[in-house]
Amino acid sequence: IATGTNDVTLEPAGPTDGARLHATRPVLRVNNVRPDLVDLYLFEVATDSNFFNLVASDQVIEEPGSVTTWRIPVPLDPNKTYYWRAKTDGAAYTAANTFSVDPRPRAYPNPFVVARDGETVITDLPPGKDVTLVSPSGRVIRHWANVNSGEIRWDGTNDTGDRIASGLYLWYVGNTDIRGKVVVIR
Image (cartoon, rainbow, N blue to C red; front, top):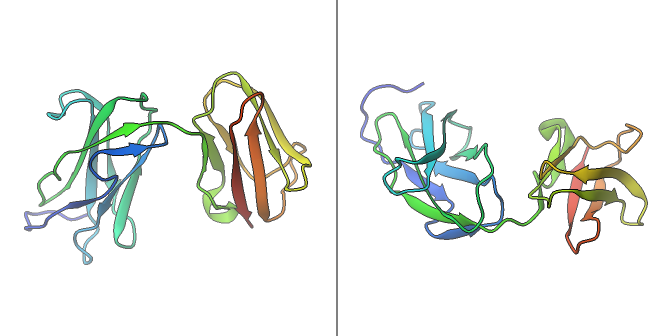
């Protein structure tokens, strides 16, 4: 972990200022600042530009490559403005960027690489609805009844616990027009 007071500039990689995001638990990204050190990044999300009303914050160890990410661990309220910033040792906070949330159900990660990810999550589902996952031919692979948590976690198995093959699968929420796709890679 880097320590000291190196003069470095931390830049946000996304979301951009004023973005309208389609997930209630979005991913924030910063560009890594020092390729020769492993930095610890502090992410903060608040409902005010002074960050007095923090919604979530966490420290994240730098990820390999050029960008470090953090997924906000709590669902954010729709149609509200949020402020986010980040910092690392030796760097000032990034400028505060704003974003708002307009949730739309989606699968994340997608494509879903079973060996790497372990599971995919279909997020931002309306409460109390059934969710069905089918093959492109329409064969039911998995069914979840009365989902109240707003999300389902799927490990790539069918209703009997058997692993399904690599390919494209379709999901839909019962009695709505909400639907999506997920690609499974074994």
